[in-house]
Length: 461
Image (tube, rainbow, N blue to C red):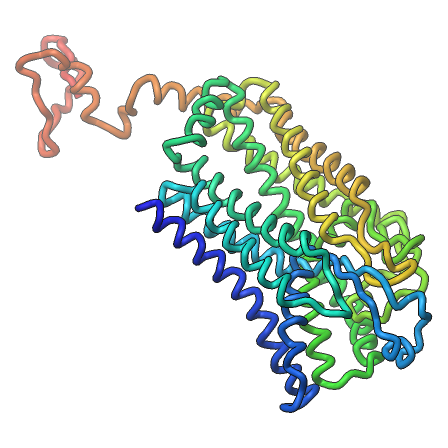
């Protein structure tokens, strides 16, 4: 495929990703705008609201400055009229990551992943710059450089991950292949990078699934409190729709909070508060329906939930150990120690990034500290995953595992199995014989194939 065509297709992918993200916001906002303000509404504010929310969904903090009229109408203190809103609805960011990863895979499959990633990222950055220039508002302002850098950074991370992952598996005839060849020359350590990535992926997927199950359980247990907060908001159908869509956008953020709770450190909903398995200490919290899922109290016995991240690490260790046995690379202990440590460190790193994105400010004063603590959450997840992975990866080798390796090695040395290939015996016995008989599937064999009734010369099978 021509390099120009690769660049064009990557740019189109980036434009589609940005357009879909903006359309997902613009379509419901248009409907709600019409229902709330009627056909005579000021449509000039629709696009700035859409662009600002799109930037916010990619991690750009908003500087909120409420007008005096709004402050008087709501009845809040004047010093609370200006605050930072930085708790990101991660649904938009996750969508951009996944779409960019798909584009990166396509670029790598075409043989020019570097050009594809660069073209897609540049296109996305240009679109982000256009949104930043045209979508400014007086109420919610954003730093211009962050409004361009953060969306483009999200896209380049997704595109690079998809492209490099595909090139590592399938080859690219260039840089990745050279790195792969150097890694292959490390002997028993050559399996470490790939297995660390595989194990980390298993840990992240397992933790996400466990967190989703925990959130579902809390919805079933405390759904009535969430419904009561919806009713207390006293909003009409339009307001209820806005609240519901906002909750869906914050669902990935809620999953990160659930991971922090399962790991032990928990999270805060305001300065001086704590929600963890060891106990819940909450003051006055905003009447957001999603916060109705927070447990009112906990017991020290709830700390047993930290076994779930340990189980995620053990599951990753089991999968990696199975692959090492299959690849005949489970013998040396040192590479397995490196893999277990690598999975723990990489898993803690991924969780740390997620926690940074899922923490921030939702209001003035004490509400400027919301979300898990980055350091404690990453440390707890890393240690728990390390324990689980080490249990499976560093356990003594079982005799069945050793027997399986001996069988595989014997088959590899013999080249074939007599049971699976009956003709192989003839090829071994008659190799180099001019009048070697080539067996046919219709050939018959004598009953006395060992020659007990003849001259004692054994007959080949």
